[in-house]
Length: 70
Picture 1: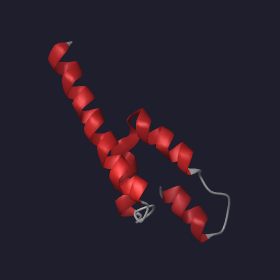
Picture 2 (picture 1 turned 90 degrees about the vertical axis):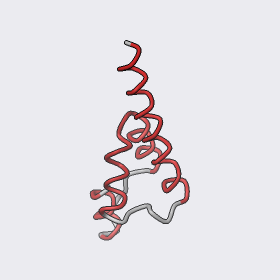
Picture 3 (picture 1 turned 135 degrees about the horizontal axis):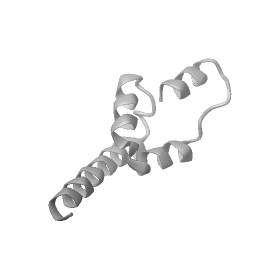
Picture 4 (picture 1 turned 45 degrees about the vertical axis):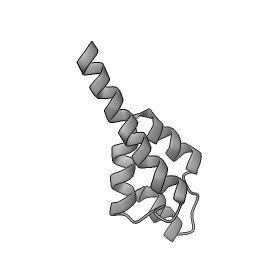
């Protein structure tokens, strides 16, 4: 998020939203969420404001399930 925010300010090539979603879905939701609010980047996008916490909850749930039953 920090790199994309910096590139946005400098009017340079940006990281695509689909790439950010792939990182989020591959267990990067905590980092994406923290970076989103730390850098105040993508916080106006409703898909990120709702989707990142949902991904985080799913990841925590999967982790709890894994450690409880395996």
